Image (cartoon, rainbow, N blue to C red):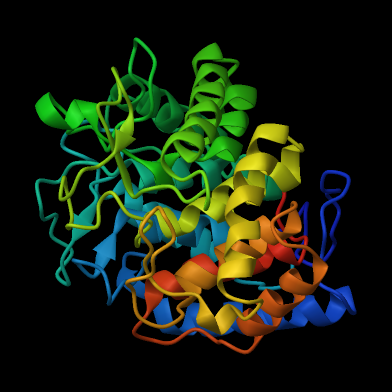
Length: 393
């Protein structure tokens, strides 16, 4: 397949961020080179062929080697790297083939969240919200980057369609299965029912994605979701983390009195702490503030970023992998998934230029490690954002 011409090539910095958004000091071209170096390592470590012209992002540190979150990251990253990587479209299309070969048991337009080494769906074959949010967003990026992409038919009576048609089908499926009809934050996946209907993961609160989905579909439900999640993030910060602004991994009682999980709800005793899910929140909020200029996103990201600059005494290497909402650290040493997102926050009022530069230098000096897919993938996407190579579809 021809790679095609990129409409928004990496390194072009064609999209202007909101006024007042910072960037690392120094030569932007040098920053781009660092991102490209990290991307090439990330791709060599984690993008693996799976047969039939498909490929998938390998996640050695996840519960299973192939997870929905990883495929979403891969689709977003490859779409943004077009123009620098001549094979970016082939990578994107290969991952899309893999995703379409593994539909969720709960909805055919969503992705089964986990596969083993043999490519078998495991763990119930249902969806994970964050993976499908990124897959849909990646499809919108691909439509902007390369055009329609041809007919991705699935042989069924639901039809196929190009990148945009596939994106809208997935967005509609997310609305149908994961957005509560009566309002409230997004659910964990198409399997959520009973007790889990009252649980939401804060790292699934992606305001930039909700904006893009509203624009692509014209569906007001995504505008309502945008307002719900930004308002709830600010409310949780004020009520439960007034000194730090930190958000918890999971929120419970979502339809009545949203609050941090009181202990283990889904994953661990740290479900109510700023742990390995919520570590992404400064990035998601900071990205939306940089792209949209929304004062709510800027305030929420800024609270976390300013606190962390003081808590770490301006040294990114002192950021721990886990915090109580009051700021007490319990985690081990610095990792990209915890450090890098504060770079996104620093861009938009979360600590200032010196703190942003320190975070950037830490990222630039911390290349992807082959056994740490999660940190490498989060950090690379933050580096794309901080170097002003992120853009909305």
